[in-house]
Structures are given as structure tokens and as C-alpha cells.
Image (tube, rainbow, N blue to C red):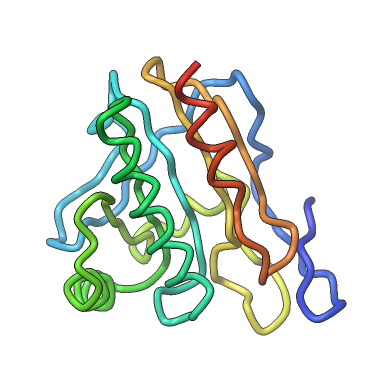
Length: 170
């Protein structure tokens, strides 16, 4: 079991540990248009999955905006897709996308398949945040292997954007 911190308290994260070099686990998420989003959709492509609690959190929203900027910058260097995943409904996600004008990243919801959080070791299992996803970055190469993983240790820290993108440029 892993832990993250929030206001000097430890929060338990449950799920299957994610290891560098292992095969990415299959998933079935829901797009903002209610269509399925699976690992197969990204087969042969480089993928950064950013998991987070909710678009309604200021820090999560800021991190999403930053990922959009990084994706825009790297668009001409390499083909990397950034997929932002939360338990938010597709309605909330589309509202956020439209209000922010986010053109360089994709979104999916795990509200129909919370097992995704367990399979990628991001499920918050205690505290007031139980049931939400911890903030994490999972980078998957074009062979569907885990290239980089970061479970963000404090709820208010930002991910290492540079490490995520650089892990897929090698």
C-alpha cells in the first residue's frame, strides 16, 4: 500500500503497484461523448495518463492547463497523447474542456469503471477523499510498456512534467 499526504495526514492509496517496464494494464474508460476509451485506442502511440480527483479542484485544473501547454510544445517534436482521467462525469469534463479551450489533451472518466484506479494504484481508500483518484502520472510507450510512473506524494504538489515527457522521447 502506498500513501500520499494532505495537511500532515497520511492517506492510503490502494491498488496494484505499477512497475517500470511492465505491460500497461487494459482499461475501459468513458469519453466525454460517452464512448469507450481503451488502451487499444492508443496502441502504437505514446501515452501520458494523468489521474486526478476532479476538474473542480483548483490545483487539478491548473495541472491540466499545464499539461495542455506541454502537449502543445511537444506536438511538433513527437506524437504524445495526454489523457486526463478522473471520476468526474463526462458532463463535468466537457464543461471544463469547453470553458478552458483545451485543444492538445484528451479526457476520460472512470466513473463507470473505478477498477481503473485500483489497476493503476491511484485509488484513495480512506479520508474525506475516499473513492477519488490520487494524482499520478503514468507514461506508456508505443509498445504499451510502462516507461515512467509518478504517484504525486502530496495532494498539493505538481507532477514532474519534464520527466513525464522526456521518458517518452528516448
